[in-house]
Image 1 (cartoon, rainbow, N blue to C red):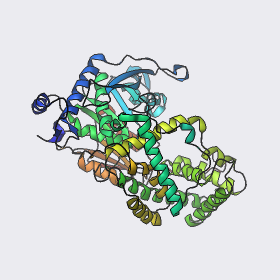
Image 2 (spheres, helix red, strand yellow):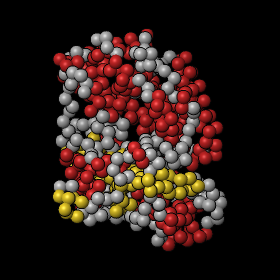
Image 3 (cartoon, one colour):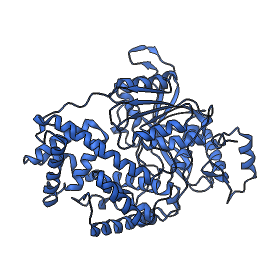
Image 4 (cartoon, rainbow, N blue to C red):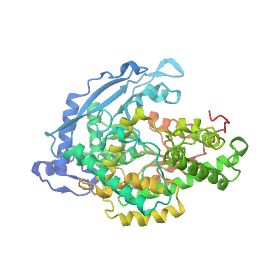
Length: 532
C-alpha cells in the first residue's frame, strides 16, 4: 500500500498494523514519518475530539473583539505515541458563517462547513483570523464558511513555549554586519548555544514534541473536534508545509486545501537549505525595492539608480553604527525594518520615506518604524521560540560551524542583505539538545488527494517560487496559480483581483483552472512624500 493512503481510518492494513503494534517502541511505518504508535495515537485523539467537540463561548479578551468571534479549546496529546499521557489545549476561534450574500442581504448562501487557516511562521498565531470576515474581500467566504483560527501548539495560549526571558529580547540597538569578523562570529556562536540551552531548560522533555508532523496531527484532531468529515484548510507560508504533510498523511480527510506562498517540501531542503535559498531570494527582492526607489528619486532623493540607493542605505547604516537613532535604532533594527519590505511591497513608501528623512536630518519616521516595540516582547519571544524549536526538531542540521561559515560566507558575497542575519537566527539548531527527525517525503499519487490550489508570486523572497513548483510536482492533480513579476508574500485577500477570483472560485464552487494559470502583477505602490 502506498504510504499516502495509510492514515485513512478505513484502511484495513493500517488497522491490522495498529492492532498488532505494542504500545511502546512501535516500529516505524515506512513513508509516513511516524511510528505505528503515533498513528494509533492520532486515531485515539481524533475519536475523542469528535465525541467532545468544542464548547465555543466568549473569548478571553472579548471586550476588544469586534464582530461575533467565539473561542474554545481542543485537547491534543503532547506525544501522539502516548495519547493517554500528557495533554495540551489548543485555543481555537470561530466566526460562524453569515449565510448572507454580501451583495444581497436577503439572499441566503448555503453553509459549506469550516475553513481553517494557519498564517505560517513557524510560530504564527492564527487566533484572530476569523475577524478577516469583516473585510470586504473576505465577506463571500465568510458567508459560506465558519472562519476558524487557532493558536498552534506552543503559540500564544496553546501551551506556550519560551526559550528566554522576554526582557532579554530587545536589548537595544544592535549591529548587523554583512561580512562579520571572527570575533563577532564567536560572540554569535556563544549566543546560539545559550539560546539552545535555554529552550531545553524551560521546556524540558516536552521540547522534542514541537514539530511540523505534530502540527499536522493536531490539525486532524481539530478537524474532528469541529465535526468536519473532511478538512477545508488554507495555509500561508510555513502553513503550506505542514498542510502538505497533512495532505500526505491524511489524503482521504481532505475536502479542499489552499497553499498560499508555498515552502519547498523536498526533504533535502528542510530546513537548512531552504534558509539559504531564502537569503538568496531576499537579495533579489531588495534589488526590486531599490529599483522602485530609484524610479521615484524626485520623491525620495535617495539616488536615481539602484546602486546609488544602496549607497544611501549604507550611509545610513554607517551613521547608525556610530550613533543609534533615538538610542534605539542601530544597523540591526534598520535591516529588520527593510527586511519587512522584502515581504510586502506596501511597506515600500513608508520605508523609503523613513530612510530619506533620516538622511536629511529627521530620525523620527525611522524610529517609529524600526525601533523595537517592547510591549510586544513576550509575544515576539514566544514566536521565536516556536520557530526555533520546530525548525530544529524537524530535520538534521549541520553541527559543525565550519559548514555554516563556509556556506554563508560564499552566499554573502553575492547576497549580503539577509544572509548572515538569517544564519544567526537559525544557528541554535547547530547545538540543539533534542532529537532531530527525518522529514517526511511529501508526495501523493493520482486520485489519492482531491485537487488542491497552490498560489505563489514569482519573486516572493520568503518562500522562493521554486518551492511552489516543487509542491505542485509532488501533489498529484494540484493546480498552480502564479502572480507574475510580483513578490508579495501571502496572496489571499490581497490586491490582485485575478488571484482572489481563483481563490473564491475554488473555495466556493470547487472550480479550478487548468493545471497552471497566471495572473498579471498587482499595481506597484504609489510613492508618497510623507510615507503615508
